[in-house]
Length: 68
Image (cartoon, rainbow, N blue to C red; front, side, top):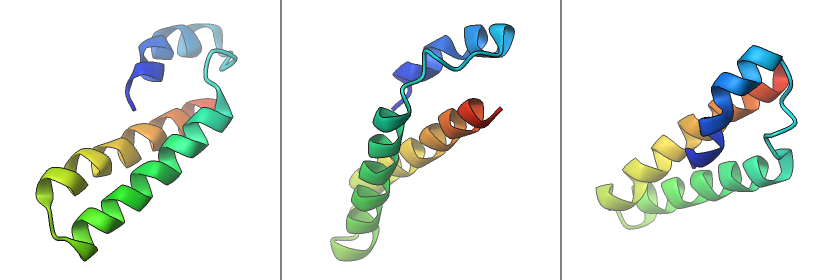
């Protein structure tokens, strides 16, 4: 989830989000939401939903970078 954020400084400096691939970020976001929901509600496993909740946050940061 965090690997595209390695280009964050370049995106902010150049104000060009071309290095962030929107379809991949959207799929990562959907994946994180689904696994978080499954881990939190279906099986109540913190080891599953906590890392994926972090993935939701990181994917949201990437969406914000693309928007700006």
